[in-house]
Amino acid sequence: MGGNGHPFYEPLSARDAWFLYAERPSTPLDLGTVYVFEGGSRIPGGRGALGIEETIKERIHLVPRYRQRIRRVPVNFAHPVWVDDPHFDLGAHVRREVLPPPGDGAALRRLVMRILSRPLDMRRPLWEMTVVTGLSHDRVVIVNRAHHAMVDGVSTVDILTLLLDTTPETYTPDPPDQEWEPRPAPTDWQLIRPMLWNVGAHSKDERTVLPAVWNTTRVPWRSLFKLSGKMVSPRPDLFFNRKIGTQRTGRGLKVPLSAFKALKDRFGCTVNDAVLAVVSEGLHRWFKARGESVPERVRVFCPVSVRSDASRGRIGNQISGMVLELPTGDLTMEERLRSIKVTTGDLKRTRQAVAADKLVGLADWAPPTLLVLAGRLMSNPQGGANINVTNVPGPQFPLYSGGAQLLEVWPFAPLYPSMGLGIAIVSYNGDAYFGLTADPGLVSDVEEFTAKLREAAAECAALAAGPA
Image 1 (cartoon, helix red, strand yellow):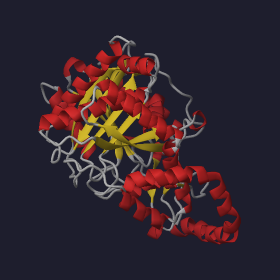
Image 2 (image 1 turned 90 degrees about the vertical axis):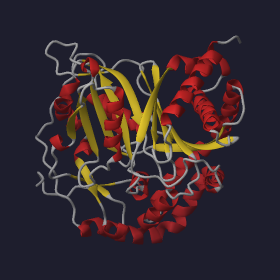
Image 3 (image 1 turned 180 degrees about the horizontal axis):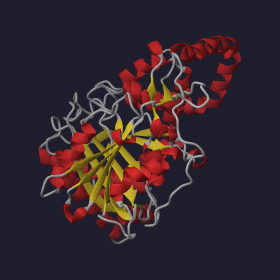
């Protein structure tokens, strides 16, 4: 099949493999993003967003992972590997849907959630795009999905910059030197044999290697013990922390980024602190409106990218995370923000945000079978956090596809087991876009939560504009 006949494979890192081990049928762990484009093209004869398939065809050689699929190693003797898909068909990954009249937001939401609810086909490369037409003003929507094992949130932005342009004029890269041909996949024995050799090598060297590992990681390990204590200690018992089903519902909220930046300048916090303050206030208002007992604190897991500039362009997960207690009791917005600023500052000073990354990095030392069990353990209903809040910084300038401007970006993170509600935020061209994903069986009023977040964002803006 391949040009030189030599088998090709690339092992997943422990970090990437964990997302495969932790996935369950009811919780597909893929990242969804909804891109809303203007209709037509600003360039005469431009293909617009409708021509995204042609754009991908011209640029896919820049992202080889888009033509690779997962190959598992027998009995999990080693982590799964990436191999070229011998049956790759671009048309199977770029689908098209037409909304029935009147093409309103409600119909689009239903379609998007239906798309995000179905698992990706593990026999193919773990991504797909759905081009949606039939909307008002001839807008074009692209629903992009990629499995968490393939990319983290920040590198998803990197990939999309390969498919988008910074000006209406379309960029056409140089074609590859030769036409793509899938390289042959390895046999089971070719995958297992290196592991058998490595076992012997590790047994000889472990007396010198393990002390070196300890010496270089002893500080992160101390922080890791603190982080682990949070994850295994009892979390507040909230109504959406139950076993989740396969259905999804969602809503979106757009907030000017200037309000968060103004709070940053006024209070010396980060933009992420201000975003978390809005989430905290929104939860407080929502719990009260529902007649629920309002907890003093809600435990939140916040993924944090540790992707360096040197690693930009590489596909794979380079994420860490913070586990923090959001103050959801009866506080003013300013009190809430100051509390969060202190908490996140303490986490950074004690290096607990980095500790989570060290945990997964050291997982490369663990047998894959152990990581399978760890993935299942960490995804059980007794998981340590109440809710996942992902904040991804995006470009603060307009982007285009085929001459059509990208108007809005709506992120939707996967729901994890026993977390029936998740929040993802991405900033783009001066606005912060909140995407809410929920299990309708546990959260039947996600639109009410969205309304409370909107009220919280308005209070945030008022605080930013208020007297010093």
